[in-house]
Amino acid sequence: MRADDEPTGDPRLDAHKTPEMQNDRDARAVLSPAYQPGRTDIQTTLVLAAPGEHERVAWRPAAGPTGDALDIVLATLQSIDPTSFPSASKLDYRIVNSVDVIMRKPRPLPTKRQIRQDANVARLRAQLSSEDTLVALGPCALVAIQAAGLTATFCAGHPGLQGINQLPVAASGTPSENRLARLDLYARLLLASRGRCDRAMLELKALRKIEQARRKEKNRLPA
Image (cartoon, rainbow, N blue to C red; front, top):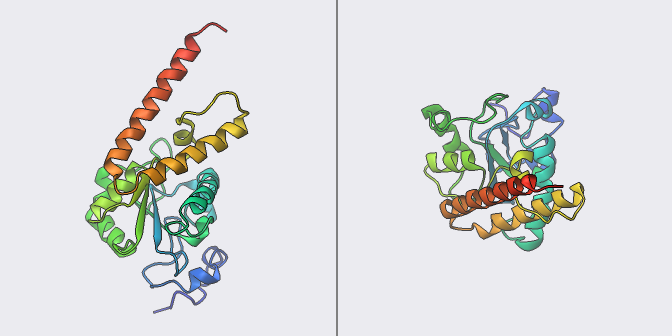
């Protein structure tokens, strides 16, 4: 059997393998649109929903706009809690998706039934570790961690554009400033969720409903 630090012969895999990834702490899987081994010295795993077209093209998880947002979030997380988040780069973390199939519109997210299928749960148990700090980035990720019989330490909504834009922010900034403010809030909500994920997800849902109501009321007001 080929060791993980040997070339695969597939340029999509070899091109994205950093030296740290090539010396992964185990040989459970190679880099794919749904999985990234991460650095051997980082014991934090990021769990996302599902790979999409961006991930298929890049042949690694968390590509495209979601990956860009995640790097900004990780910079904040690393500055506040460097023990749990020792790097500001998503490339340094183990990343696992709740399912390992490419999801596309009109159904870009997996169902709970898909996540809880026996074969998928077996994959999750092989790729996740109870010794790691598990970070659930979205409801699907939380379902996946729980399906594997594990507990998430941190949780937040999915870091995609739609989810980030549902967070409240002062309306006086430019679109770019507002995006950065939302991502900063996202990171701080994630840190505040430590050890209380179920409650934190309910609070996030309520926060988004308040923001939706505020926007609806704003749109009703005369210009």
